[in-house]
Length: 359
Image (cartoon, rainbow, N blue to C red; front, side, top):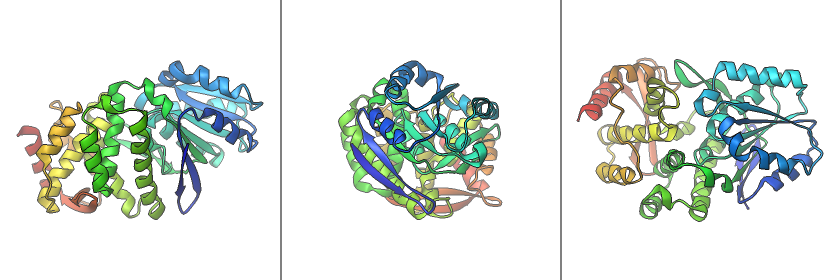
């Protein structure tokens, strides 16, 4: 078991990474004497893992309740958020209770925001079950979606800990592994040129990801994110660099319909767009064609979906939390590991969008 300590201005907490960690989680929880454990998971994770997960807790005397929500982005709605609060109030969850988020990024976002708002805040623990969640489970950004934008209703709320059991990743389909690996690529591009080259040389297919290389990929990704969050917990400065590829990525998700493209696949397209912008506006020297050939070999779509419209994407991007006035802020790269935040005009962004869509 590896341990990474995430330090922020509001809280420090451990991230435990390894194989078959749930018995350690049970010990961690029972040692702290919570009155009730409120498990929030989704229907897909419940079908695969809920029985064995609850069996581990039967060995302890802790009282548990379970809320099962829809899978994916369908969990991050106002109606599901309200349903969770209603069930908790009816079951007598209180400030000495603990929320356990068992699932991927969507469950973690929802459960974390529920924990942040229930009785003005109760503790929670992230138990990720996807590769994508190695990014979302760390750093304390929790949220639900609004029909006009992704993650627009949320908070900064750090967990008590994160228990990342790599065993859960065995059940993931290739599409979800691909989605999560996009965030590993992002971490490498924004901070670690060596990490990027190792990924590019060693991972030539999604099927090449296994327990051994996943452990160091996840470990390095979490280290990178933790180092950034330590300096800037609430995204007033360098934490914005973690949004590389996300401005367009979130707009693609919102416009095509949440769940119709995975988060990582949309962000990968957003990263290609940001790399093209970086060549023009940040003097990046980088072989984008070589990068595209690599990620296409991994099975990624690299073009903006043809069903989308550049003007609609621009309108959505203007609602992004990072936008200021008439300018759109983009995370660009001056070189691998050297990101910069650049304001771009609507005209520049629209021109480059059309160029990427129609060339």
